[in-house]
Image 1 (cartoon, one colour):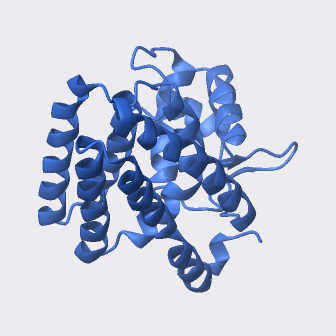
Image 2 (cartoon, rainbow, N blue to C red):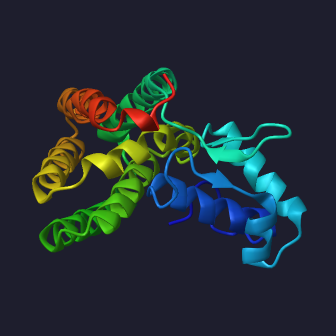
Amino acid sequence: MVALGSLERSTSSDIVFDKLFGQITRLELLPGTKISETDVAKTFGFSRQPVREAFSRLANLNLLLVRPQRATVVRPFSRKLIAHARFVRAAVELEVVRSAALDRDRSVDAALKANLREQAQAVSAEDVSRFHELDYDFHKLLCASAKQEFAFEIIAENKAQVDRLCMLALTSKEAMVVLYEDHQKLLEALFGSDAASADEVLRVHLDRLTPTIDAIYTTHNAYFDD
């Protein structure tokens, strides 16, 4: 899974960015973890310049906290930033699914169906990491179906704020089943050209995060900075 942008990326900065983006959103690097330009550069065998560029991009996504003369850390969760990200994502993605329901690119249908089948397999295998990747790809395919591929860049930038929370929440097969069933209903609405139902399903889907955020704030308060 490439985090953001084109699959043709090949610069050193892109390689570092994509690797760290994945590690942060999968919680392989926990909130508050110190991270060093020098250490990362040594790991990749790069100079510090591309690492510095990657750090800057991650900081712009509010995933790293880069502080002059102090250690860079994986940014703690922020309920304020999460609320802002959810608002922007919902505004964009609701319009995406409405567009897809009214006039979708049917050449994307097969990929959406295949993705849904793989989601079912990940649920059955209780493979949280794979389900997380497929969920990311599913929402990207929705933008392609709506003929608005550019919109996923905005969604992904904001989705990154909550992806880490999702990794904490997706700890059971039951949690994955709920999201998988939402995806099923959403495709049914899109393939049936039912914009109203698509809107309703997506709103329910995105709103599932509200109790999750509250619960994680209670159980993992040390990961938050507000």
